[in-house]
Figure 1 (tube, rainbow, N blue to C red):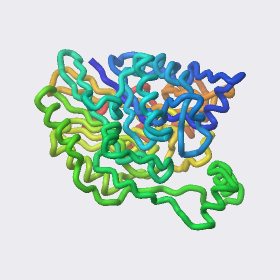
Figure 2 (cartoon, one colour; figure 1 turned 90 degrees about the vertical axis):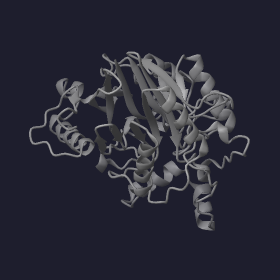
Figure 3 (spheres, rainbow, N blue to C red; figure 1 turned 135 degrees about the horizontal axis):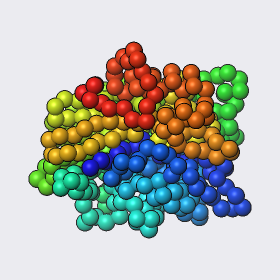
Figure 4 (cartoon, rainbow, N blue to C red; figure 1 turned 60 degrees about the vertical axis):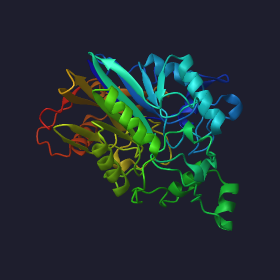
Length: 388
């Protein structure tokens, strides 16, 4: 039986503009045309937006998201069984947006983990594949308090699975000049202006802060999962932004979770592909990259290939035998819309410059496997048997 994992699923301003027609949003085939999941029995993704409804205003800012419900319909058509909702955008439209997102996913028959609307409900998910019990849990480093200014009180903190107790520290700049810039120009227009004048408009960020005490809720989840499951998989939302190498915070987090008994870690948040680490009983993918993000998003730093991502496949034969493989996907513009494709499809159908695509895929392969490949070939799927 096969379980597959994708990277970040975004729905930003350019995507909304392209999908809008007569006040309706049509995302048909944006995700469901991907030729990657034919062998997959259970598909997991990282949802980096909320479904807070039209009245909460759809995304109109670079760093705060709310997406039409029709996007959830396309996610279901694409084959997603479960979505991780613990990430820095979980509270972009407050508590009500978080709760409505859960309801929309339920309506579309998509499971979720990472956020909760019921204090008594388990924070994790247990599934059975090939008679193997797999425990899935999802936690995040934070929820963008500096941007959305949404602070949960003690009675609300159960709503989001946090690795640590949230500090609720506002790190946004509070000086007069910064406030004036925000008032006069949107974040998107500020980035466009900087790019037009050849000025730096974004920067690589590395998470170097210190990891403090893990939340008791996480420790409790781990104890319960160890007694009820054969394999524990953590969906980890942590890391920097556009950084090829993980920072000290995330490396320490991976180390602690391994000691607690996690078998597999699937990382997301940096928006680019990062390396894997493994031994005989443990596997960690620090970042799978962006499974779906608009190629026209203005803040992207293209040198580390944010339009490419890893789709990780795990074939589970029994509790001790796991076979890992992966596909390389890319989001492209196609006939005025956006699509995710297996790069093998792009290469063999002449959608893109073959030399550029080849070199990019080789870089992604070498970054992910942390190896050098002399005779790289673009394939639909790559076995990790030669790496692990």
